[in-house]
Length: 388
Image 1: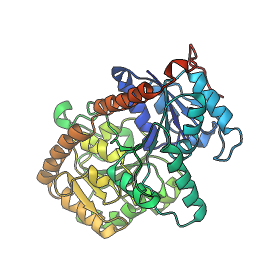
Image 2 (image 1 turned 180 degrees about the vertical axis):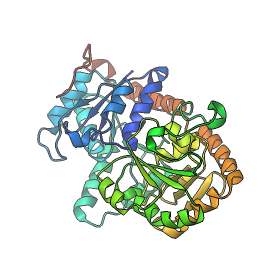
Image 3 (image 1 turned 30 degrees about the horizontal axis):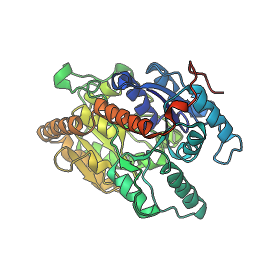
Image 4 (image 1 turned 120 degrees about the vertical axis):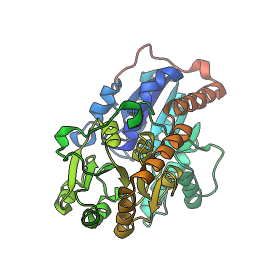
């Protein structure tokens, strides 16, 4: 089954990493995946391009510059038909708004996944844009929310759920994040410059305002006072990096974008995600898969991953004191950290297994193909063509 995945662009973010990971098991689920950026190529919007290429994908660029681009529909219809896909899957807001209509014109079923937490937009323009996205996406074969929290938020903001709405948790490759006990002692990559033997708290997230890095930085001096030598390791890149580096004090290391996140997590004492909003943070799922405890905030779908008091600790967003207290509490209690980490690994295996996620996607795709009355009349391209 050929599946064309269309995403808004290719920055460093969770959705892009998910597609790269999914491609590793896609053939086992009967899926032949290709991926395309809705936006044209720019250096700023291609940070995850090497990751996607390393995963065996050959990313293309459709070249739609904005939501109201008059060339959007012809470009999208051409890209969908040229790919020879059986199903197209749109990711993120602009793609979920435009791709379902283009897919109907191309005669191909379309699913859309929203990776954000819907909210009541204060500006009319933003509210209209958000509602247009929901209304367009729900008219495809399915509108997927990555967490129950995101589904429920959409219903509160945009009205009752429609029959096409569904919740499907993302998955991670559990084998890639096997805990230390399964792989032997873990050590941090030496190029990070972190001294041996110090407790490391890792934040894996794009450096954007909603991720709340500033809150962690405000908490860190007090954490270091109570746990001398503790290091806050910030993994990821983004537009806020310069501002965050300027605000950072002692004991903070900026690692940039990395492809060795599993190794970093296994060698960390604790994972931290101080987000101000989340739909379902991949980084927290990965930490659970690595068998380490997490301190995170009570936003969106995060409580669907972190079971407070069993696999980690949850605090209110934007509170550096509560965040720091939770980090210190677990850093000073290694036995409790280990217990939480083991429970987190079991939860990840039960709820977020990558192969199970791929199989559920394949079943959804197959159902949409079978339900299409004109399935035998859809034009096919013998080979994938690159969109320009």
